[in-house]
Length: 149
Picture 1 (cartoon, one colour):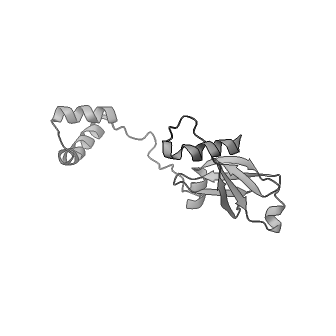
Picture 2 (cartoon, rainbow, N blue to C red):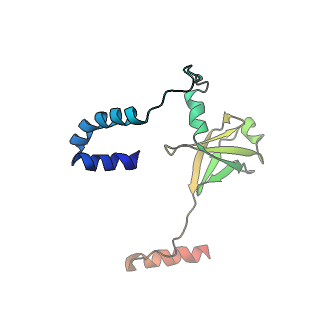
Picture 3 (cartoon, helix red, strand yellow):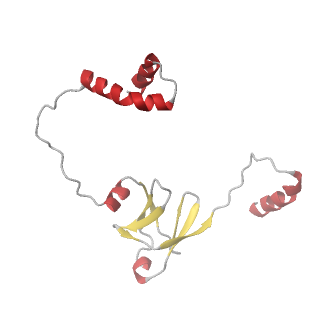
């Protein structure tokens, strides 16, 4: 429909957003008149939503398995995270946890659906080998490269 909408706007001579906003209801009613079809069954077969909003957030997040190290750390997206030590989390050493990366950028970690308390420990340093360095900073960059070797 996006392709058709642009073509119809061109044919209608629409040149700005205000004209488009005024014209869209007319386009939609004409489009629905031409292409709408009645439902095969008139009964509404939609089911009510059973999941809570937090469960839906989990469903639509990017989920990745990570193994919890002996030091209670895991790594995700070039960042090392430290799980708060307590008897419950210490029992999870060596087990796989799920890291949830939500669309808004927040990160969460869970084991069997239970959230784990954690914090970002450090960002892993990465040297961009293709970057151009100014003369003033060249000494610092060379010293850092020397430490990495």
